[in-house]
Image (cartoon, rainbow, N blue to C red; front, top):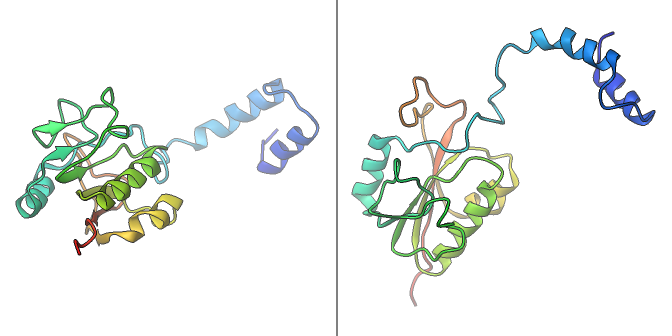
Length: 176
């Protein structure tokens, strides 16, 4: 039995069991077709270590003072917050470089970056260029956006990322 979306929907309507012999057979039959990891909308990790050359170029322009979402191993600034510190709950100051976790919380990180820029911080974000997402339209589109050419190689990875990237800059409001 092939398990198509229509069959799955039909099982759901009829209150089918979560796992039945027919479903297990269908999963085995469909499984070998999925030999490639689908990385367009997902990834194996949320943490992507910032490429050093890109950071050096941005840092030369902006002189960053805080990395709000780092690990001790990948921190780009002398001052940084780790997952345990919870950068979303702490104040940001000065010139901030943010390479947020690229998972489900990225919208919260972008909201925080925008809010902190409105409180006076300059926030430069390295993010996946996912222009079809709510967080992009709600926050990234408010900043200065530079799409990066090609695909970045993050940290010690052997190959490039499965997604395009962008740098989004949130500047503080003009003092007036």
